Length: 393
Length: 54
Image (cartoon, rainbow over the protein chains, first blue to last red):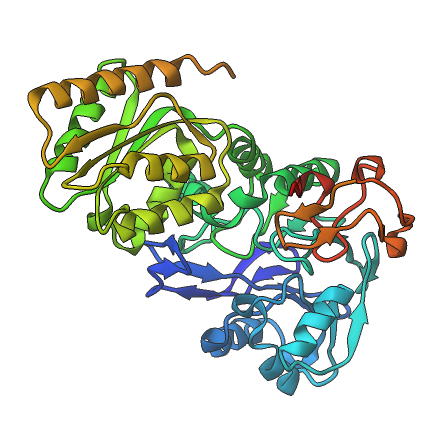
């Protein structure tokens, strides 16, 4: 069923109940592809849906108007989850033009979309009768061709992927999801954290527009627009707190015992710990790992030695953490070897690559940690905890 | 004068060439480009650039 948001403004998107992994973002309660219908003298849609859901989109539109009556297809973003049913829609709405940025026209053309394009620039306005839509170019939020659409009279902002989450709420009400912030956090960590300085510019633009309602392209609609703006601002500036992420790879539990001793040391300082064995991570675990890393002021990584280097799963984790582009964290490496030492030097390089500065020399043990080794681990954990507490904001 | 690389898309700003399409004359060091200049390839703002050192 479609949902009325305001006079002449309707959600006509689709729910993907089976979606559990949104290209790396865990979506345990499914996801949405949002498209919006604007009924006026001339009928417009803002974005479409991922192609497998096109029939559902068309059914939703048909509740209010013949789809053939659509005059303008506003494309905020060319990615397939928003634009892959354009060709099918143009077959139905033969008189419609595609309203988008010049870069978006270029992208869509390369994706095989042909049609009548109306290229718009930042600040251009489309009048459809009584309603006015202003277009705002928003490059790299999160692709270069992205624009936002602002329905001026109603004060409704359609910022595409920005201010999104990924969860189904049957009435499309963000306030009806008690743990909505956990969905925003996962989605932001993966999609927007790497672009944080650009997000802040987008937030400035949003504040100038002062929207009453925000209709993102994923997850529910924000009737309290400023709530999601403030949350995104926090996630783009200082998402971190007194928290340490300990991530390790272990086969015979030697490195795991070290990880646990470090965790106890950190906990003794009152700092929160998240401890993860890379071997236990499934796709949802990898998604949460990014969000945990974003929030942690300290990161400890540990590994056994395989053919002179870290275990590959741990390297995969650090590759992912590079994406989050966190800054100014405290780091600690630990590991075990049998015959060739040097694992922690390699791990320290990984820490530096994610801007987690090692607070001390890594802790390395031969084969299995002794009680004295575990005491060293505990003490290093205390040091890491104290360091994390000392960070001035 | 060092080159600067866009950390978002990999575009490299070469001060010898400048960015004439955006009105940045050849020979302009990265530091002298106006703050509102954006990456000509992807639109990322100036602060997303990293200095390239040999």
